Amino acid sequence: MAKIHYLSIPALENVSALRHAFTTRQSGLGARINGIKRPGDWNSIAEVFGIDPDRLITVNQVHGDTIVEVGEDPPAAAQLRQAQADAIITNIPGIAIGVETADCVPILLYDPGAGAIAAVHAGWKSTLKRIVQKAAIRMRDVYGSDPHEMIAAIGPAIGPECYEVDETVMGPARSEFPLWKKASSPREHGRWSLDLVCLNRFQLADTGLASKNIHALGLCTSCRSDLFYSFRAEGRTGRMLSVIMLKP
Image 1 (tube, rainbow, N blue to C red):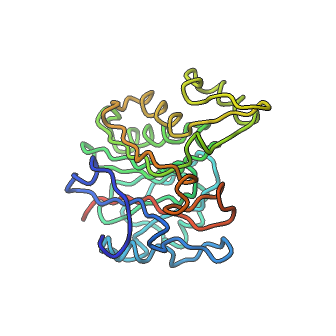
Image 2: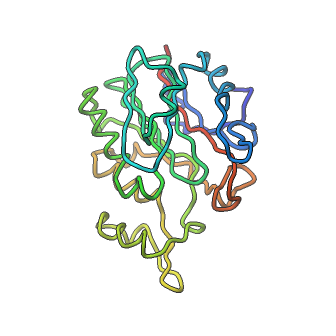
């Protein structure tokens, strides 16, 4: 990975069967022209991973809870990029799956027993729809994965110090998460700080993941807009890629 600037989590970096990366803005990957996505945004990642660009799968993220399964003979990457979804799962070696973020929470899942992976995009809407929990359950249902054995890697995302929301978000959060107080704190004028990473940790724990298997980089995209793209800090901007692949 010497050609690009990226971050990784040791719990996955030490798995010989895997390759993963959380890119940064310093590599120039994912830069947008007026915010418009380009087909070749991630060709450099594919090259470093040693795969054809058509083997690096992303989707058209829509802040929902739809999950795409990638099989042995996936449709063309260009076709999958039009699929409206926010999570991807596969058990096929040599196919990299990734999600694009610029504040939302990227989560990579790996089940060593079943040899299956997932890439999840969790903004506030998808977080409230429990997308990461649904992705882990889908891996269980499709691949026979055991959530108790899964490893989760949470990449750079906006932190609660920079993520202020109103009752439109907090009302549903209180209804959905019994431990919502641990992920929020009140601010003035009826607004709140909200910790999206914490809410996704709750979901992973609810699904059966051991706390020792849930890892987070703990870096705020808005605080560190020198290192990451941040929609909150910059407005229309580029994207980072959080990507994972089972080695062929």
